Length: 68
Image 1: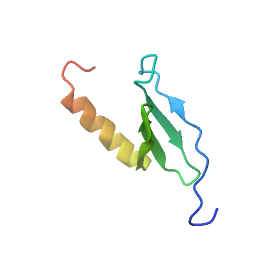
Image 2: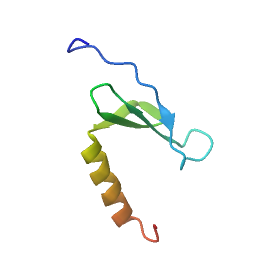
Image 3: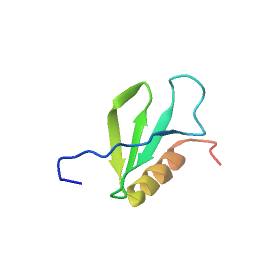
């Protein structure tokens, strides 16, 4: 893959998302990055390494009350 080429990503809907367009989707790229997007705004993505996703999820769990 050349530097300017963007790989085709295969998006998967989160199992925690409800039906409809209010969904979080993720995809992994060949370089090991993880891409997150909201289905109602698919042009905006968040690109993370696995350690960054772990940190994001840990911070989210700390901020949401009554979360197991």
